[in-house]
Image (cartoon, rainbow, N blue to C red; front, side, top):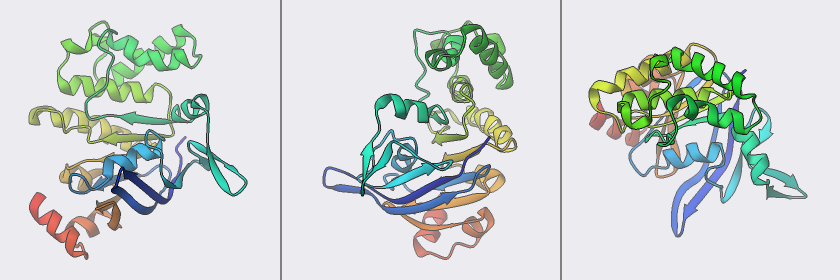
Amino acid sequence: MSATIEISNAVKAFGDKPVLRGIDLTIAAGTVTVILGPSGSGKSTLLRAINHLERLDEGYVVVGGELIGVRVQGDRLKELSEKQILRQRSRIGFVFQNFNLFPHLTILENVTEAPISLGVAPADARARATALLDRVGLAEKAAAYPRQLSGGQQQRVAIARALALEPQVILFDEPTSALDPELVDEVLQVIRTLAGEGTTLVVVTHEIGFAREVADRVVFIDDGRVVEEGAPGDILDHPTQPRTIDFLSKVL
């Protein structure tokens, strides 16, 4: 199953530095949304707010009809317990730009760790992890450790780990930014496959060609605000906002 993401008036500051300035955004279930923008524009913070890795100062996020990280109490929003937030995050996969694999665990153990901690029987978790590693082309690496894999292979393991909990949404935070150029396509190919399978995907990336090919919608963010959003052909080929035009002229 996939889920709709609704972001309402998302506001976040770090100290006296505003990062998100009242973002409203709806991402339809089963679609691929690519978020573009310059460094420091708030892209990663917005992504982390979706699964409550960053707590918003104002506003809220709803995934599949459920408030994330908070509940309504009177006329205010109250923080959920960590256990409740972890349950919600099990529906929202997250792939980090620097892999975040456990170095002391094998590749198979990295993929089974979260399901087992949430009560999945170890044998079932291992069977699913084995199938997922095969799906990303790494079944033969199950007994290896992260240090024995290339960056592209580690990122594919991270994607398998995100899939292990059968999430409704998967968030990718610049999944190719830490990779050597020749390793980028092997990761993008896995994401291309996922894009055709109906899970809601949100991808922060600078890979314009990938956005053009795979995205249903492109969102351009700058200075903590949504500047422009629309179909890839509209935003990438016919942007209407000066800031979008300027950004694309430098990256295309």
